[in-house]
Image (cartoon, rainbow, N blue to C red; front, side, top):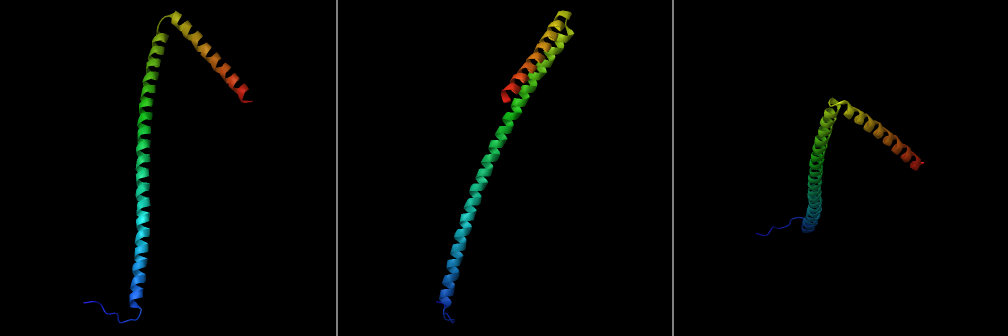
Length: 111
């Protein structure tokens, strides 16, 4: 049975409420779509950051291995004979001088 409207203008109120509901549903759908795309972007960014951190971890491990090897070679050189100690002393002094020379040149360039 078709519904009989007792109140005058009742159909127009239903139409108005229906139109408002449709507008609000479209607005909600738009917001959900934006939230969904934002969630995808956050997921992609998290994956990129995780990959970057994994690469950084492997770089630190390789640097640690390099430093460990250098320390072992240095220890071996120090424990060996007198001639190696003299060479080590000359190399150390040379490195310190090169550092100060580079520091001086960089400070002159920045002025």
